[in-house]
Image (tube, rainbow, N blue to C red; front, side):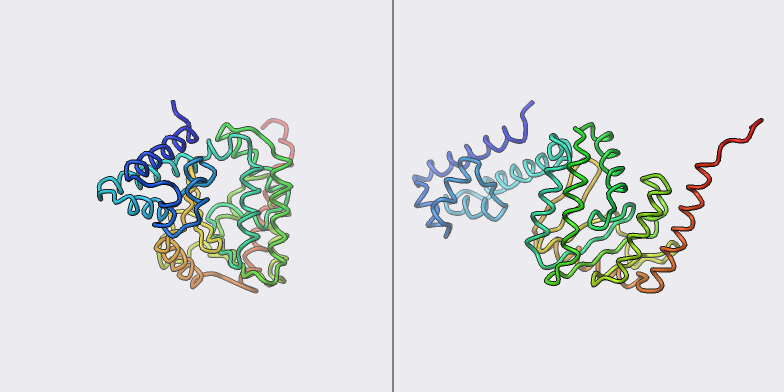
Amino acid sequence: MSTPDDRRIAFANELIRVRKKAGLNGKQLAERCGWHASKVSKIENTRQDPTDSDVLDWMTAVEASEPEVERMREWLREIEIDRASWKHQLHKGHADRQAYSKQIESSVSTIRVFELIVVPGLVQIAEYARHIFISAAQFQQTPMDTDEAVSIRIERQRALYDSAKSIELLICESALMYYVCPPEVMVAQIDRLLTLLGLRVRFGIIPLGTRLPTVPPNGFWIVGDRVLIETVDTEINTESPADLETYNRLMDQLWTVAAEGDKARKILVRCAEAASAAAQTDHIPPQEGK
């Protein structure tokens, strides 16, 4: 079975073939595309992954037919899906993926996050994050590098204090009611969320029982001009202007029904009390005869 890297090499070789068929060298192709000459070499040697627009420019430069253009664009989409699979991204563990998040978050001025089931990584306490990583590694059957992954996730939280960034964190109340960690850890996690109310970060909660303006099928992150959507087996990573507009519009609509400020505080306190009660129940030894 071929790997994502094997498919990248095959794709690059096909780009080389169509360039040579058109009678162009790398410099000539770069000129037609309006690129620096080194970009062609990097793509052909798989040192740089081409984007959809790069492939479109390339195939236009070699005067390919419309079916050939669509064949190459579809091939690229399949490669991107393979590369985005959690099996591929996490084949060494979670640390590399956390480092990637840290890198893209540090380079943008806006971050907008919506989560249905979990607390966003940017505000997770270490112990909560630890349970998330262990659970994910067990499910995906990938290596556990939990300590390193947690460390990088905590480092990412420096972004919260960057005055040059605009950060929005919106969660559903369900993210506080589903325990992906022991209840006592959830109590501590909610305490961390309470501190957000004093920061410049915009934080909101969509209460249970709210009539939604539209149905969000999944959580998502908008990091600068990039949209990240996690599914069970892969992560969609798109910079399409149409996708960006769609998810920003969805985020705007969800904010219209969010509780903020004191209303959010009341929800957090209520959920903390429920988690505290659950923690006490968990620690009560079974009575004799039962």
